[in-house]
Amino acid sequence: MKILVTVKQVPDTATKIQIRADGQGIQEDGIKWVINPYDEFAIEEALRIKEKQGGEVVIVALGPSRVEEAVRQSLAMGADRAVVISTDAAVDPAAAATALAAVCGEEGFDLILTGKQAVDDDSAQVGPMIAANLGLPQVTVVLKLEVDEAGHRLRAERELEGATEIVELPYPAVVTAQRGLNEPRYPTLPNIMKAKKKEVRRVSMDSLSLALDPRVTVNRLFAPPERPEPTILSGEPEETAKELVRLLHSEAKVL
Amino acid sequence: MDFTLSPDILQMRETVQTFIREQVEPHATEIEEQDEVPFAILEKSRQLGLFGLSIPEQYGGLGLSMVDKCAVFEELGKTINGYTTIIGAHNGIGSVGLVEFGTPEQKLRYLPKMAAGEWMGAFALTEPEAGSNAAAMTTRAVRHGSRYILDGQKIYITNAPYAHVFTVMAVTDPSRGPKGITSFIVERDFPGLRVGRIEKKMGLHGSHTAPIYFEAMEVPANNVLGQEGQGYVNALKILANGRAGLAARSLGSSQYLLDKSLEYSLQRQQFGRPIFEQQILQHYLADMATDIETLRWMTYRVAWMADQGMPVIKEAAMLKLYGSEVYNRVADKAVQIHGGMGYIADYPIERFYRDARITRIYEGTSEIQKNIIAAQIKKDFLKSR
Image (cartoon, rainbow over all chains, first blue to last red; front, side, top):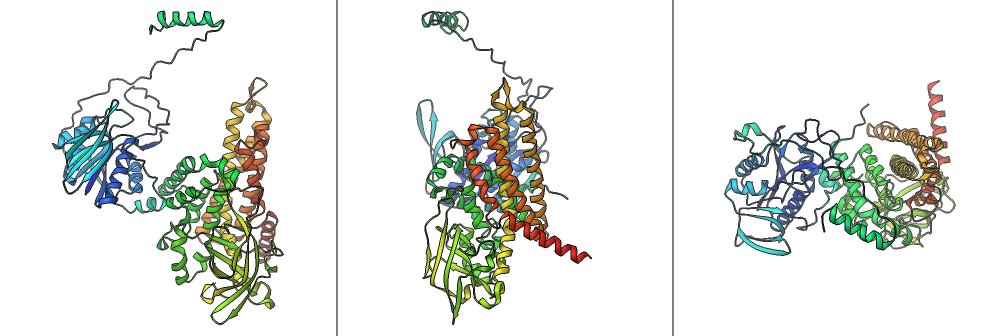
């Protein structure tokens, strides 16, 4: 089974984000970059399927040269090889999905796995758009995945608000991973050494000759307003309770 | 001079950092109080590849250069020293002899299992009457045809309770002094080998040290490591090789203590402001940081020299000496900065303070390192005249 995993590199969730002076993006200097955590679940799931059923796991990533770090990390987890679509441009979800779908289509696959969303822009569009671009069935926010090779079908459990939905679908298909699907492994030290020798094919985004006019443009990024100083009430409980109700009613307007 | 670490080793260091934070540190109190590293942690460390750092790739290890190995050890130094000692002794004195002097047959038999962590390594030199003066050893090895019979006792053998492969020094020819010592590869289940009671130690809890006894123990002649009569020189070379790694661990521990001390001094308020604002504390911290920076450069410089194949007998002794002394100085200051908090066992500073003490003793005391340095500078001086 040949599995492609599309991987995005995002700022480490522990990083303090600063908005650029022009308001169009974030300051990238000094940021620690990591694999999007949801994509890690996708990589782990692909590796588990491969370990059980054999086949190949190929990473497909898109972005500037720093993305290679995430690719190396994915290879160290155990993926076999990688394709990087290199571009320095800011890419909106539709353009990313178009480029990724083009490269996936050219690679050929039985299954495409990716995270349910990236933790930087939280758009959650790229997985579904890849499926749409390639005319494939898709299942998103997956918590459990079973592959029936004989019947050429997938059985997926997906998370709904307060319920679990069980879906069956044929593959090739696109599956997006939710936290809880598995526990991603550490890249072992020997695998970090081996990753050096694995193939990384680089394709420039321009060479794909795709129409990638952005459908979404970022107008402005701004930080949420600072939280006002908390009001601390003191005095007799009877009095403070009354005061609290008054504040919740007339100031916070939640009662 | 370029001391930039390669992307692979940076990635390894980060992996080790994450592993320590998520898998080892949460067990710190348990390891300290039970004096035992849970089996599951050792198993996970094996899976991560921590037991194959110095073993060549062709035998399933990572075959790291000394610089790279030091980078990993520096990271490991930042966690529970007892845990690190299990891994350090295996990758250092426990396996270096086989890597350096083993025959292809010996390497094939032992190294793949040692790289996987399935067989742990230990090094047995010290005896009740032969410590710093290792040449005074009395463990005897007498050849009978295709095997040797060993009788004697070794003490303070790190990893002995769980090791499978021991590098053992024994006297084959008492008339020749140090030149009558031979090294052997001994397996745990060789008849006549017995491991004694685990010692209770001041620190390094979780790392187990015990005496081992040889009672008419049979060792096949094929298990001689290197040449007969070469054992003392082998032992010195094995110990010299381990010195950079020990210093790198001291470096990591010192850095950890500095980070903790900075954090505490910026947060602890006395006289209406953080104690960091007291100039005396700033000077303590500046001294610690300067010591650590000096140690860092020394560590990677000596490791680099070793990787270039340059002789490092003097430099490695200086490094081991300096690393141990810095760790002890920094630990002392860290306790002082933390005050009462530094003395109670609920907080890691007290543990590091006890763990630091052994670094001035094991694998060659600070005094022995100075002897080595003095002998080397005398030799260099006389040669230059």
